[in-house]
Length: 213
Image 1 (cartoon, one colour):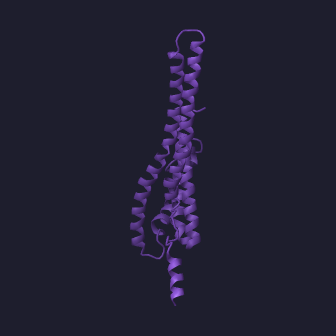
Image 2 (cartoon, rainbow, N blue to C red):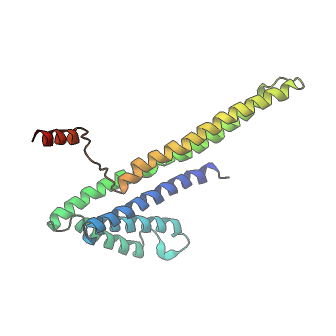
Image 3 (cartoon, rainbow, N blue to C red):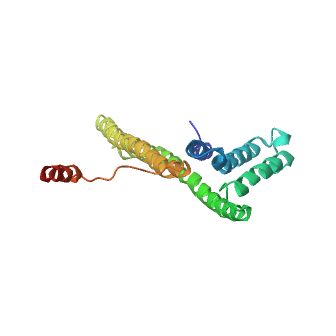
C-alpha cells in the first residue's frame, strides 16, 4: 500500500511516537515517585523534541512554525532552562548545567540511535515484499511449458514460497517489535527491573531453628 519512501518515514514516525510516549511515562513516574521538580527536565526534552518535529513537519504550511524561527527559538530557550538547570533539583546550578550538557550529548546520540533502530521494521517489510516477488518470478519462470505440469509447479512454488514468507513475516512481526519495546522504549521510559531475592532454603532454615529452640 506504501512505496519504500513512505514506508521508511512511517517506521521512523512509529519509533519517534513510541520513544516520546516512553519519555512521558518517565516524567510521570519521576513526578509520582519524587515530585514534579524531578520531572521538569524530562518534560522539557519532551516538549522540545515534539515541537521541533512539529516545526519541521508543518513549517512549510504554517509560517509561524518555521524551524528555528522566533516561536521555535522561544520554546527552545524555555525548554533549555528546564533541561540545563532542573535536571537535578537541589544541586548547585553550575553542576546542573554540566549535567545538562552531558545529558544533551547522551540524548542527541542515544535518541538518534533509538529512532534509527526502528528502520528494522521498514527493512523487514521491504524484504518480505521483495521475497514475495521473487517467489512469483520463480513460479512463473521455472515452470515447464507442459500443460497441467506447468500449473502444478506454479501452485507448488507459490504455496510453499509464500507460506515460508508469511511465516517469517509473522515471526518478525512478533520478535522485532518486542525487541524495540524492551530495549528502546524501556530505556527511554527509565524502566528498571526489580524483584525479590530467590532464597528457597530460608523458610526451611527458620523452621529448623524454631524446632531446635
